[in-house]
Each structure stands twice: as structure tokens, then as C-alpha cells.
Amino acid sequence: MEQDFSMLDAIISKYRNRSGILIPLLQDVQHTLGYLSKEAMRYVSVQMGIPAADIYGVATFYSMFKLKPQGKHIIRVCKGTACHVSDADGIKEALRSELGLQGDEDTTSDMMFTLMEVACLGCCSLAPVIMVDDTTYGKLNPESIKAILERYGEEA
Image (cartoon, rainbow, N blue to C red; front, side, top):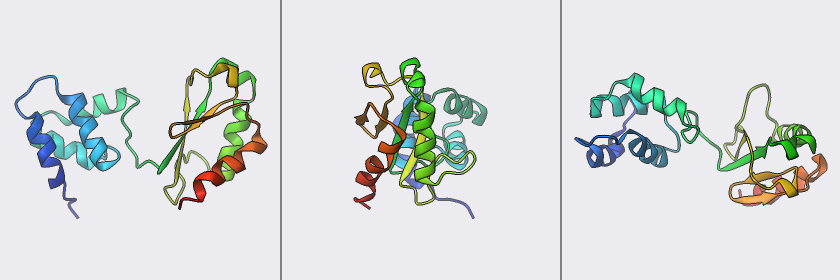
């Protein structure tokens, strides 16, 4: 079944016949859809006359682009040096356990949370640190994770 991407036509027309527009175009598409699916990238490719390989290359090069659906809440686990030596791995494992993530899963089945590692959140004095959306939580231990996640579960 062919997916309807007509909602992208207004975005595409905004960038048509302009040069150097691939990144902002893909940002707008991602903002509309929540992520960049292969089908959406193919649609943009056909509509804009940009080779699909070029679009995919940009989408996979920049970490701001997501190729899979993301959860409502994004949890970033800091893996910088200060966090690493303060048990960031234990924090990550506690998150994975509480969220019920298996194997290489990074998004919960109910689409509430997506877990990702980041190189540094710049809060070294609070190590170990996570960010949930735009809120930073520091000086964590694995036992503190459940209470943090419960704050977000209450909105559902």
C-alpha cells in the first residue's frame, strides 16, 4: 500500500528550484512526520529530483536526523568521561530495565520513550547525568531511575 505524503507537498514547494536546501528540507520533513522514513525520503527524491542516495547520505550523516519513529520522550544518557567514571553504564542499564528494552531496542513499544547515548551533556559536576526531553537529572544512581520515569508515565 502506497503511503500518502501529500502533506509534504507544501514543504517541497517551499524549497523547489533552490540550491543548498537539502538539510533544511529534511528538517522540515522530519518535523512534520517525526522521523525520516525510507518512503518519505523516496518521495522527496522523486518530487525534488534529488538522487535518493544523496538524501540518504545526508540523513545518515547528521545525528539530528532520525530514521526510525521516536518516543514521546527522548532520554539522553551522557557518556562523557565524568559520567562514564560515575557509572553511566549502570544508569543506562537501569533505564533499559525499567523501560523493558531488549537487545538493540531503543524505543518502548508504547512509543513513550526513546533512549539514546550522547557524547556529553556538559553537566560534568552533576555526573552521572541524563536528560529527559529538556530536563536534566544529575547525581544519579541506578535506584533513582524508576522515580524519574514515573514522573513521565503519569501524563499518559
